[in-house]
Length: 126
Image (tube, rainbow, N blue to C red; front, side):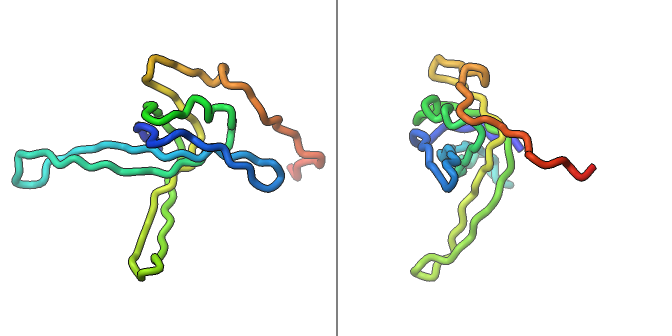
């Protein structure tokens, strides 16, 4: 799936167990439609919490207001608040990021690779 939107705040890099790093950020996506029987368009903004695991060095380019094109998959988290109200959030698990706007274009090659991919020690079963 693809979404295009603007970052609502600067991205943050979080370090997890085993020194794995994840870049977390939020994106606002604007949309509009005309309701049946009306001429006035209705504007809607959806917010996506995003996580990106590939290259944490990209976080310095993910600043508030930057226009991004993201490829990945969506998941939904649902829960009940302490007041008993149902709540939900959309999460976007990002596989690929393209940066637009603010006069800068960043390619994948311009971002240093801080992780090394290791081949498994054992043979595959096929």
